[in-house]
Length: 98
Image 1 (tube, rainbow, N blue to C red):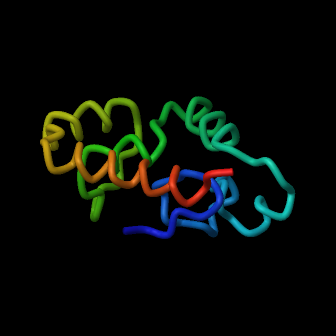
Image 2: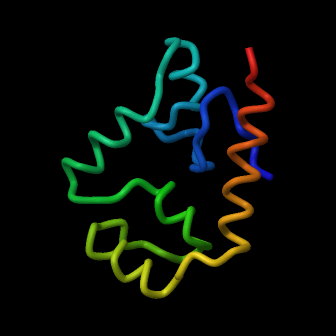
Image 3: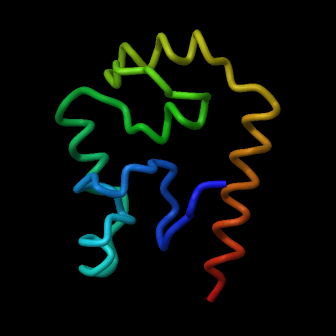
């Protein structure tokens, strides 16, 4: 399972300036998904986490809304992916209980 960091984010690219688990963002404090969503809306794209929720993104390079529609057709979300996603969310919640 991926390192869940301080923020729940399935994107493993912590060098991304929009990733809430980027060390520079963590140093600033309460930084969530806002920057990523703003960037994707401006570019007509869908955040990587939505793709990853459906399946393996290895080799995928079309992050547009249209690309997401194709990805959904090619990667219908099965029971295993649903279980993995639920387990990741549960592990994050358990690790970050106040």
